[in-house]
Image (cartoon, rainbow, N blue to C red):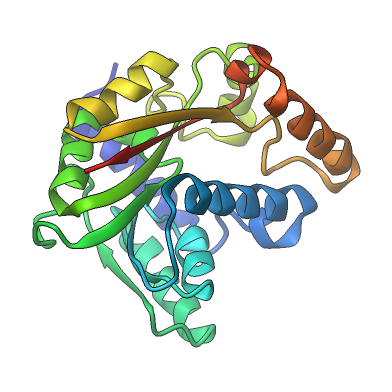
Length: 248
């Protein structure tokens, strides 16, 4: 197991190099657009977010979720450890004419530039999996959330067939930065990360049987599979993402 600083260095270098290209499937492929829309819809529904709420996108990468929320009328602050990601976020927000989305370089384990009790809500998608000290990061989320504010975070499901069977292939050929840095969690572990920070009214939903990188040729069968498998009792516990909602 590599040390925390080395893990951060690997992640920063990866995203600095791919800031302009990362996640392009969110706008160019059927599966990517479906995946993005579904996560945003789930976040809003589970947390009851309303346009005008101030949302922190913690680990925003190059801004796909931040900008999608801003387009829906939310005020958004996106933070990420990669400087190049943040510069790309700013470029995209400007080109889209979005004045309700701001961005800042920050380490999720230490959001020192953000004051206490700032946000109506926090989303953090596909980010905590790369953070060396997840508990410390979620405690920071608690600190900067307003009383009564809601968070929704996700974790890769350790028992999903994707991670049990296909992860070695993905690490080697698709996501080479993940092999030493990516952390997968159980449902119990994911819930505990949020509870231990002080959040209440915990709700857990396991979902996603489609990868955003699914080709257009296979997209519609996988979207059908996603809808069917996500609705089946017990089977739905094996989805790829564990989403955890909490209230301060």
